[in-house]
Amino acid sequence: MQELLAQSSFDKLKQGTIVAGQITEIRQNEVVVDIGGKAEAVVPANEFMDVGELQIGQQIEVLIEKLEDKNGNPVVSFDKAEQKKNWDNILTKFPEGSIATGRVKAKVKGGLIVNIGVDSFLPASHIDVQPPKNLDQYVGQTYDFKVLKINLDRQNVVLSRRELIEEQRANKRRALLDSIQPGQVRKGVVKNITDFGAFIDLDGMDGLLHITDMSWGRITHPSEMLKQGEEVNVMIIEVNREKERVSLGLKQTTKNPWDEIDRKFPVGAKVHGKVVNLVPYGAFVEIEPGVEGLVHITEMSWTKRITKPGELLKVGQELDAVVLGIQKEEQKISLGLRQLEPNPWDMVRHNYPIGARVRGKVRNMTTYGAFIELEEGIDGMVHVSDMSWTRKVNHPSEVLKKGDEVDAIVLDVDPSQQRISLGMKQLATDPWSDIDAHFRIGDVVTGTVTKITSFGAFVELKDGIDGLVHISQISEERVEKIKDVLKAGQQVTARVVKIDREERRLGLSIKAANYSSEQIAAETAAYEMLNRQSTGNDMMNLGDILDEASKKE
Image 1 (tube, rainbow, N blue to C red):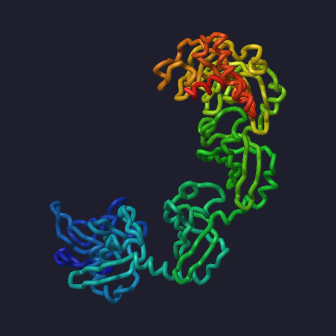
Image 2 (image 1 turned 30 degrees about the horizontal axis):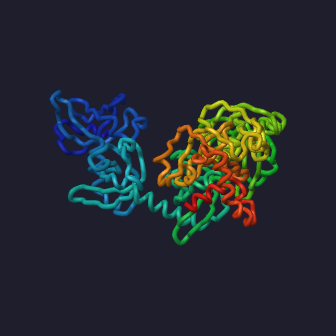
Image 3 (image 1 turned 180 degrees about the horizontal axis):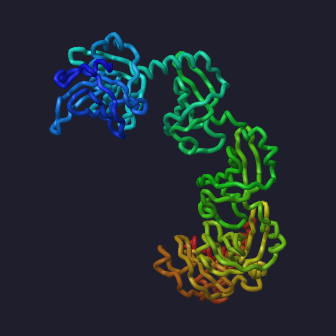
């Protein structure tokens, strides 16, 4: 080479030819080469695979692109000299289908330029199994490629890295399917995460790790357990060699915490955990990884009226609870919060003995009674039948309204059912127990019309006792509609004609209120015969006589 350089002269240098040169200087971004011209040539450092391997005095060949630039310096290229030499034997060196090693030079439209000795084109669709979004990451990297097509006329070579990867994976997949067995633990990389699970790259093929096989505990999305690109150990659960499918498990690589659940968390034990989910009927509490218990809404408080768990608890909250029951096969644990505190109902019999007088506020009403709050969380119920001795109460709102302060008597206590029965009428003496001391047949009384029906009018007398004036006993004249004669709130005078202890009601007659004793005696005498013939006592009072007289009219 030294002799060749010595014989060369500037006159022999021609544009487009390959000449030998000697490296005289190696700079940071360029290499200076003496090719025997008027001036030294400069080659960009990026044309060399590794500038660090070059040495001063080393002989290289370059292609003369221009004899002189505007500054009088020759323009040369080491890379183009190599390519020109390689194009002469490209089919011999890299026939179609062969494997070539090359370095990615640049990103171009539709793919990458790769130097395998000559510049070749790598389409973006052939870079990897999944076309990458960022091609810049490949520039400067060296890979193996498969030569797809060579066009010598156009000096064009097309490469593929994807086919090489797919062939390698196919070989690995066959080897993996031949060796893999259920129960084995294999290392893999999280390739993709979906709502139902994750695909794990087992270095040869992908296996499906379903969300139900990720954890012994509760997870709502696979991303809570895994990250893309993460390396994990998974157990082979099932292998379908015909369809080339593999089912994987992550939780199976650890011991099932439910196997010894009854020993670790016996009934009655106090446990500590964290609220992981709230549902309308309760809260799920994780007491160890993979083990959750349910605190039903009825087990949250002895006294507070909780309509939804969110009133008392929130997700992420840590708390203590008591184990109430275990269903090992169904993997269920029942927990309670209120069991951490004394049950106030255990003291109800002592605090509210039967017969005791109590006072409370009307908290709520139903069709059958009113609930009286005796203390926070402790209610007693007054049934409509225990509101009045004398009045038939159809709805508690006829007597009470929400918020009223009322006194009552404790009638019954049932701590197991958390019930206290109260009575309001028991605060007073039952007037019907001694009704004869208050009213006798024939008495003239005054009262207020409280209710009008199609068959008569109800009249409230003293002590709240009700009387009923039948439509036939309102007037001597025939009454078609009671509301035409009487109005609610009207004061009336009537005579007691009947005492009905069973119905706890008096029979009244307005028309008989002004009868003289002689008229009453005459009415009585007129029906003495009928009374004697009667087999019972139904006609043995003034009311029956008047009723019978009305029928005869």
